[in-house]
Image 1 (cartoon, rainbow, N blue to C red):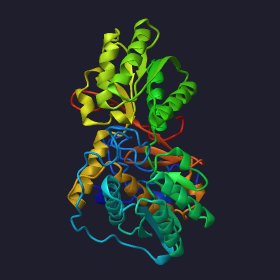
Image 2: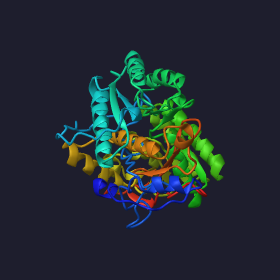
Image 3: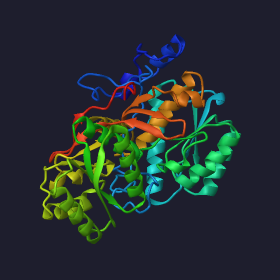
Length: 436
């Protein structure tokens, strides 16, 4: 489907850019799916650029790259099959003056290396799908360490790279960003650690802050404005706690009760019971519980013991809920979280399997998206910060996204409801940032 759609020419365009740019944009790539905003509607870039930006990694539950070392269940690569190449056609390349470097820890052991190899496959798939990509993709191995990342960046810059995609790990991103910044070359990296963004470094990743913003916005719109929160005492917990407070201020919600806990079954019991008693006394109509399936079930039992019945208030979560195991957690049934339409996730996985004969890690599609974006940027005038941070953003396989000037990504995600048979879309992802 991706190849067929990409071969079509589209003529939509609705930006304040020149008609020439609109034409270039609209001719680029057809949307890879028909489902986000309703039956039959194709996805395209919000600039009018129809896109193959298939960010099929869901919004964090399948792994956050190097985001938080203590995250526990849901780390990158866990439970994923290693994708074995099925000898696809060699990706086309453009002239030497259009080089884009892809920096990945291909030589790293374990999950990081497996993910890197799948990301390389996905990037090559984007080149093949584009047909005439107008860029030359130069792949460099960082080995997953700072010295390797620095050497890879220096080699890529010496070879004339005008844009760097990657690396994956936060400390690698810092090293690459320093080298690229000195040469005026933008970096679109895959780390989810927000502190490495900025000054020409953009993060093509799944940030929990976007998930929290989206789900709180939907909750308030649905009349759920009084939120209780059960927050893990971890780096991840601090990020989502700050995001919850920011979203509450932004959308007019109130945090009426809050407890934090150590991420163990024992550490969760007492805080959950205290919060359950506060909820049972009234005042909350939603509960924010950003936890994976196992501890979510444990916390749910403690909350029920304190008098909180399943379904008595709206449960809200994050991408940690994006796991097949969540459907077995009784307390989570009916809960909302922000993520990618499951049909879009399936579409990318199917396309990858057809090409490489294996199931991709969910984060692999970030490389597909970044490569497709590089192709688009080249066709509309080059790799510059103004093009990367256009206000209208892009529409990809994971829905709407744009880069802020601080390097962080902002996403418009679908709202999903937990059911025994898997997630169901209760609100489609927005089609554009206007009025959003």
